[in-house]
Image (cartoon, rainbow, N blue to C red; front, side, top):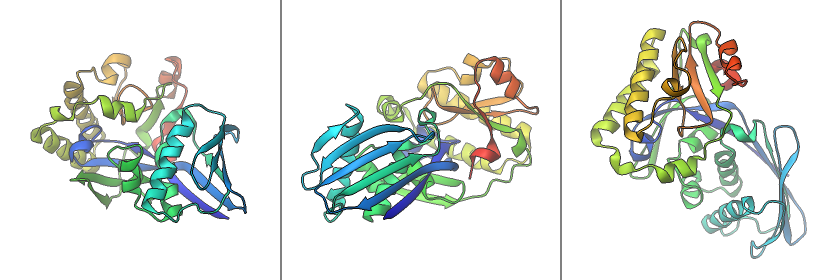
Length: 298
């Protein structure tokens, strides 16, 4: 039996701009995904995926020799999985020559957007001993920051220049870390769709430099007031590029503190920085998943 584990991810700074070389502050989560493979003498691969409650949410069976689908319980999901398996075999022709059973188990809610796809890419790359960034490029696409987080032991500064990832391990020593919370917006945003819709040509060299500078300053912030101001400047910069209102302006205009979108705008999590416990505030507005920073970030 072979077993692999990958961490989920959150992108604190550099969303969208990281696609064109900006430095981004990315954080592996304490929650992730397991993948276990049990080899058997058979000509098929049985795949079973479990959610964070241990319930089966996806099953499929593939022919090992051809990687053709034989059976599935989900019409669309198997196509992405098959694309990923075929890309893995393309990178390593010796991958999956023996049948068996694969079981994946998520530790986080599937709808949270913490990286059910990126953790799978990471696990498969470990299993097949292939380059995870190349495997991502051949399957789901994206900047690769989530792949950097999958095997990281703490926060990283991530950038990608000419398709070459650069990963620098950093430490967060915010004195105000107990005043930081992640809030789930009750809807998942498809990051692949968001990337496809974003016009990267709108990002100028000036934008890239500004976002990289903000990433460095947000990492180094020692005062919460400075941190909050930097978050707001980052939001305003991206809002102009995306032609969207910042999330605080559109949903939380009466919030005392700062709120920043994370990753693809319009769903998943936001970061809330407050000098008080904001759980009641968000709960009253219908947002019941509020997680302290230290409980989420590895």
